[in-house]
Image 1 (cartoon, one colour):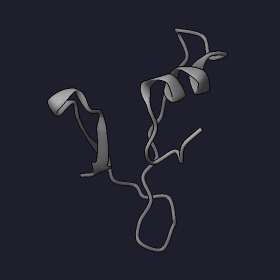
Image 2: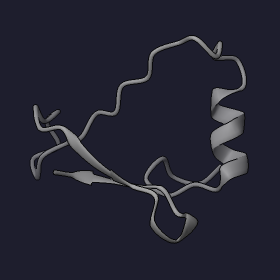
Image 3: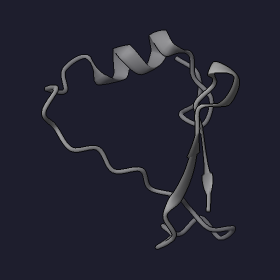
Length: 55
């Protein structure tokens, strides 16, 4: 499996295989120091690629 920051759809499916469809998902972003950030992520599906960046 690739790093969590860059993965294929197959990697994502494998990582979520045991998670039920009704489970809530939280995207955590990190600041430059590696600490969890309070900012909401910016999610973009442009060009068929899911990118999640700090807003």
